[in-house]
Amino acid sequence: MHPRRKPLRSLWLALACGCGTPPAETSTISTGSAATTAGSAGTLEPTTDDAEVTEGTGDTSGPQTTSDPQTTSDPQTTSDPQTSDAQTTDDASTSDTDTEPAAPARLRDLWDGAAHFVIDQAQVPIGGSGHREAFAVHRAELSPTTLYLYHRCFPGGVPQICLSVSDDDGASFPIEHGAVVSPAPGHPFAVAPSVAWVDGAWTMVYEEGGSPEGTYWATSADGIAWTTKGALDPGAPYRATPSLYVFGDDVFVFYAQRDPPNSDQLSILFSSGPDMGSLVQYGGGYVLTGGQPWDSGSVSMPRIVFDDGYHWMIYEGATQNLKCGNGPAEQNVYGWGVARSTNLITWTKYPLNPIMQSADAETCGDDMPQPLLLPSGALYVYHTRDDAAVVQRQTLMFGDACGAGQDPPNWVEKNQQCLPSCGGLGGAGCYQSKDCPVNHSEVGASWDCASCCD
Image (tube, rainbow, N blue to C red; front, side):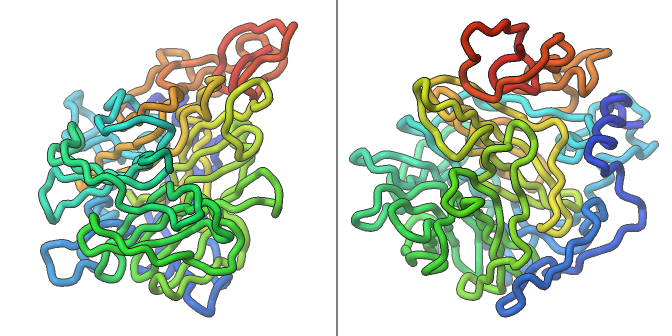
C-alpha cells in the first residue's frame, strides 16, 4: 500500500474514471507511432487509455550536450518512463517505511489519490500586471537552474509576448527582455505562447487576434530574438490557445476551436506531422470536449507533458462559454484541471477536477495553466490568479487537504480547501455562475458548485 494513499479515496478515483491501475504487461506505442503524418490524417487508431505508453518521450526541450537534440532526454520529461514508475508503485522496499522519499510527487500520485497541488509561489516575480499566461521553458543547456518565462505583457497597451529570465529556478526573474513577439500591424494582440525545440530551432506557437486563422508561429536560434512566420495553417478556421508538443519523431499542435462553428463554446483538437511545414489536422474530430459541470461550456489552453507512461494535459475549462468579462451580464466561470492519455486521442479527465476555480466577479477566475516538468520529475503549474494581476505557481506534494473520513464524492479538495459536496450540505442544486440568483437560500460553499449550493 502506498504510504500516503487513502484507500477509500484511491478506490473511488479508480471507479470514477473507470481506469484503475495499468496491468504489468501493457500494450506499447513505439516512438512516433502516436502521430498522424502528412497525408495520413485520421488514420491513427485509439488504444485503451490505461495501457501505458512504454516507448518514446514527449520532447519540449532545447538543445542538449549531445550532438542530436532530437534524440536526447527531455529536460521537461523523464527520460525513461519504464523506471519512473518505481517511485509511485507499492514496492515493498520503499512503501513500508515512514521515511519521506527524495522523489517528488508526480501527476500519477495525484491521480491515485496520494498527492495534491499546493501554492509554491503566491506571486511569480515578473514585472507588470494584468490577466496573462506565463509559459516556462527549462534551459538546461545554459544552466541547471535557468528558466525562460514567456508571458503576456502590455507595452503601449497592446497585449504582446515578453520574456523574463531566471537563473535560480524561478525564485527571481531579474533579466527582462521586453516584448519578443508582437502582433502584425492591424492585429490587436499576440498572446498564449507555447515553446519547444523543433528541428534544430526554438519554435513558438501563439494566438494572434484579428487574423482569420488565430494560430501563428515563430522561430528563434536562442529563444530571445524571434522571427515570425505568419499563420501556421493559412485558410484554417480561427484556432485559439495553441500548444506545441513533440513526441518521438512527430510534432503536434493542439488548439481550441469553436464547437459547433460560430458558437461561443470551444473544444480541443490537434494537427500533427513530421515537421512544422507538414502538419495535418487529425481526421477523427475533437479529442477533448466539455462534459463535467465545471468545463461544460468550453475547454481550451491545452498544455501537455509526458511522464510515467502517460501524456498529461493541463487545461482550462469554463462553465458557460468562452467569454471572459465582468459585471452582472457575464456569469462565465473559469478553472483548470487535468486529463491523461496514452495515445493523444482518447483522454480521461481527472474525476476530481477542477484543481482551481474562482467565481470572482471582476475576472475570468483561475485560468490559463502552463505546466513545467523538470528532469527530477517535479512539476510546476503557472496560472493566472483571480485578481487578474498576479501569476501564481503551484506544485505537487504528497497528501491532501481532506482529513480522515472526508472522502470523495462527499468531500473533495478544490482551491487547496477540503469542501463538501452540495448534496452533502443538504442542497438541491448547484449554480455554475459567478453570482447566486436572488432570493435563494445558500447553504454553503461546495466543491461541485462554481458559486453556491442552494
